[in-house]
Length: 184
Image (cartoon, rainbow, N blue to C red):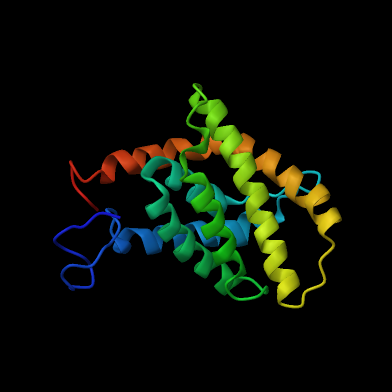
């Protein structure tokens, strides 16, 4: 989070993201719609692409944990509005994944692609684990072994392969919204 002179709510002195909420909310709403309407039908040996998760993870890598947490909170809230699961489950799972992704634990890896693949794989597993914990805590029947082996692991591999393709447009967005140039 950066302290800046203007925020969209007109209150001085509050912390906010360098990228405006006027862009963030419609962007993440569009991502949620694409995920729930189009990508919900894609299933490759139990693996499903999770566009919102990829967007949040890559934004946390590109802009840091703080903005990744904000995007995870907003994106998770929007996804939870569209889902039939417990309210806040996806939000909590995305926040945990963004927090994990925004940490410097994988910066020792010299290859940017290898780092992206590893961070995405680990964060997707953490996302699914947190989602399962919240679902079990709220009374949904959960088979952890089956869910982790037949859903989380294939999804982690699939989303790790998709991550370099999702990074390209988010790198472009990051360059366009960098505070030195201008903020949307």
